[in-house]
Image (cartoon, rainbow, N blue to C red; front, side, top):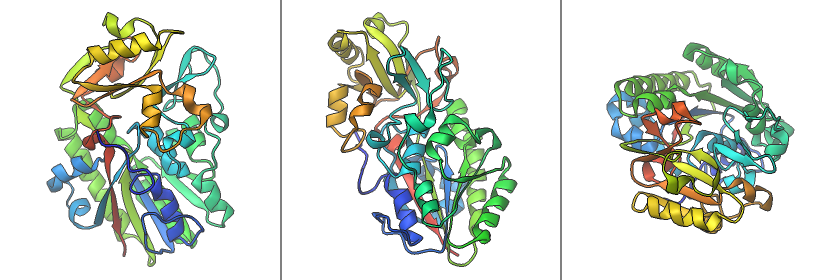
Amino acid sequence: MLLPGYGGASLAEVPRSLLAALGLREPNALALEQADRVCLFLVDGLGAELLRAHPEAAPFLTSGMTARTLTAGFPATTVTSLCTLGTGLTPGEHGMVGLMLAVPGTGHLLNCLRWTHPDGMTVDPDEWQPATTVYQRAAAAGVEPVYVGPAQFEGTGLTRAVYRGVRYVPADSVDDRVARVHEALRERRPAYVTVYYGDLDAAGHMTGWGSEEWLRQLALVDDMARRLAEGLPPGSALYVTADHGMVNATEKIDAESVPELTDGVALLGGEARARHVYARPGAAGQVLDAWRETLRGKAWVVSRQEAVESGWFGPHVRDAWLSRIGDVVAVPHTDLAITAPTRHRIEALFTGYHGSLTAAEQHVPLLEVRP
């Protein structure tokens, strides 16, 4: 088990250190050097272990940049890591503690990526994630933060929850994103620009990391990073990081069809490598015992209290967020995926998964280049 390095070498330290590098009064735990302009290139699914395994597909990222390794946080998944990067807080502080979380009092799950609720209920992003973002703090200090990403994500619930305070610049192609980043960096000084690329993660899910399509996407990411670096104005710094790594599943278990994994369960949340299991009233102990026995030797299975006390979500979890965590949390340490094919058909078909506390999923790079 690789516990996240909260407070020293995790994604939570990145945004505040970037603001400190720009001269704002924020803690600089990563000791980043001063810069007039900062660009953060966020590559979905670019795990450090995965990148090191294929230097031939990414010569710029593996040889042209200063590198260190961070931990993503738990769970190692997009919604959690984006919120960590957007707030500078641990999951236990910002409350985005998983992909699909129980909405208290509704009997339903909120998909925090798609921001969908099965009974049509509206969940206010400002209430679900009320913490001030680093972008709001930057704007208050006179630095206009810019986010360059796909047009389809502008104004979504997740974007509103984690990117409040940015000027969203929609750009779909790689060419457009590179151009918009360079424009934003030249517009003013100081500058704080974030650019997102998600197709590497998508390829990993569908065909597996290390597959031909994944390697093609890695080469595109490498070229995009090189182009971003080549256009940096003087006094700038480019940082490349990721939200999580990935493993390829060699075994799947259908949690909807195994009686030991359904008895006493009210809701099955989280995702295949980081399951939040919500028990019916009075059944939490029974569910914990059954999941532990069924997944023995394949997954770490703990109670909510054990996960919190062990620091999985950070050194502190706000009381308001405790009910979002499953009564039972099941986290595979082999290449197992705990699927739910009826409720989540597409996810059950994936090859690549993430979320757990293994090095392949937790380790993410922080790469730096300056002109």
